[in-house]
Length: 232
Image (cartoon, rainbow, N blue to C red):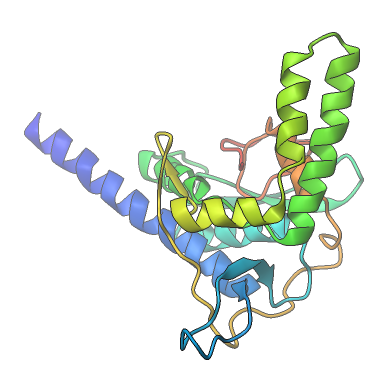
């Protein structure tokens, strides 16, 4: 009994480490940085955070971000890639939480889940796309006769990007059992680069994530295929 608990505890610890590393590698590969207000001579430091962006130039980077996390886990033998075709006819690579021989293990599943707990920092463009989708969804639900949910969605869709940034500055991006631990984004000059393939450019990540039915790392929720974990 004791040995089983020890093994489980060790696997949980390793999963947290690998999940965090996967997210760190994704941020590094895409060059995700904080944008800040101008240097303050009075304060002697950069101003407050105003948002997040990718140095790759593509600000709709959600799909590429998820794929980068999957690539890292695959390099550690904790995920296996496969290709799917999404509803727009584009070929996408998704990563199932299983070893190279196709075996699902506790460690591979937990590592994928840990990586998923690290929420993708939204660029201003991604945030705006999310707001548009929320407004459209609210309108559709209102026509179906469900007034409460649309009112909530409308309220969220009217929230400015600055509110989102302030919230993430306080809470961070890691979500565990409803609580968030503060994990800051550090600006690394030279980090990342133009790694997004043409088939992923201009992908409306927010619309894909909102459906959240198909699972795999980097999987579009409307992909024609199913994998184990979904990304939020």
